[in-house]
Image 1 (cartoon, one colour):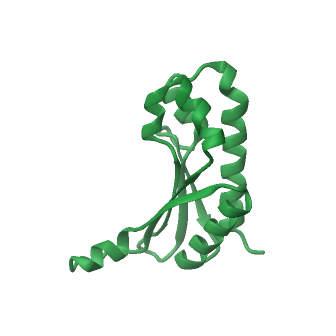
Image 2: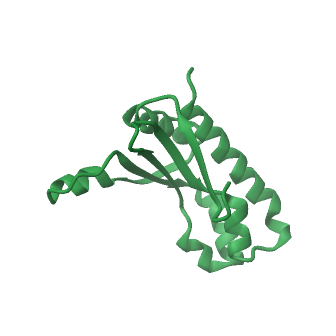
Image 3: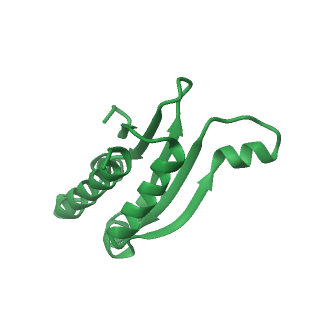
Length: 134
């Protein structure tokens, strides 16, 4: 994690395959996919070029609601988001906000630490499933 709370992991797969694996992993955890934003496709629609840049917005109201009940502004960062992107050299990456960083950013009380840790563990597992070879 960098100082801004961003976790970035290199993927062993092309961007499309990484996104497919990511979405499959999210659904296997029983989470809801709320939206899929293909930034590169949107750029192409207006005649601009952009390397693969694909955002998945997902989560679990059961997990996120208690956090918002405690600090409603965390809703700006929930549901969770994971970005699959390709760098200039052609490598694929997955980036997401670390839940512990979000908890600090929004001043969540220590009593919610177990939920935040569970969320972080789930995200790490999902990212691993999306980025590593079977």
